[in-house]
Image (cartoon, rainbow, N blue to C red; front, side):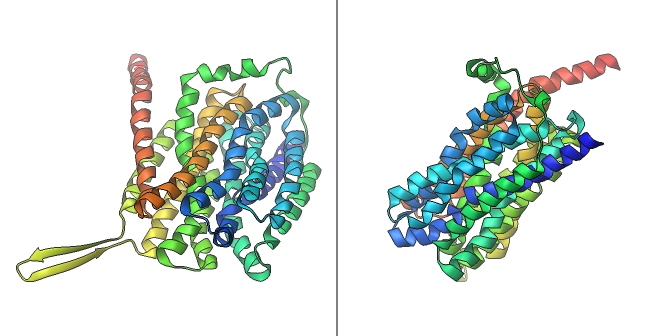
Length: 415
């Protein structure tokens, strides 16, 4: 019973800490809008600014996952949070574009908390409950929605310079709370004699690359859209910052909170089926979201007929909500794959897969901005995502077809 209470405490404290880390990791989704106006940035530069924390947060995921295996998740998570506090605070004093980019790299360390928390939490639970536990922890992705609720109010009340100060204090308090309510189990550490090179041998396994592709869509796409949607609402529909952030949260919130549901569904129905249907749902939604605002003149026997085709803000938000829900489930199902296939090396594998997802989240906002600068079509962001989902569906179909066939033959033989 005591061990079970510890596991619940670790899960609760880790989920809270990850929520705050994710909120800070996504701060430029809102903070970047007044900074863009102040510095006169173009769309590509805004994409780079928003994505810079994602780059460093992705690159540190592999070493952090390995250090979690070696030294234990509690101490690594705690020190990681403390390390970000000075950079968060200094954002208030930045005045040049390069200063925001450099500080953004240090703030991005907060995003590496996922690769620490995932193996740390997973090892406290048996395999039949691990998918749900990791899903609950992953619900900390809802920190993106927290930023969209909190940041506009802070900026409106005290100016954008107040936001980094508030976030720095929040991170410091969170680190202390995390340390007070978590525990360490020495048996969860891997053999310290295992080298970095030895742990990286997992890259020779084709399954790791497969899961990297899936995660770059469901997590990378989630991060990219979470960073981009507030600005999209401002530019496409002319909403103010508060309303734009609130509507963008309709995507971010289910994309985080419902990850726990995705973990439960993955435990019940299996990672393959769940991931497959997630990709199909995203495929349909991105197809609809890709269609740009269009005006057409159709010549009829009664004269010219003008048609205006466009997604209303309501329909657009509903589709985004569906995508956010699907991605939440997909993020959990991909890590269910990892927990099932690599239970002895979760830290290293989750770090590699998390790196792939994070890099997707870094590249996408830059590409969104570049496509918008190039074409002038805002929905080109969804056209790009539609293509990535197509690739994932094809790869998934051909990767698992031999395994499905082998399972069917085995079932027939038993019958």
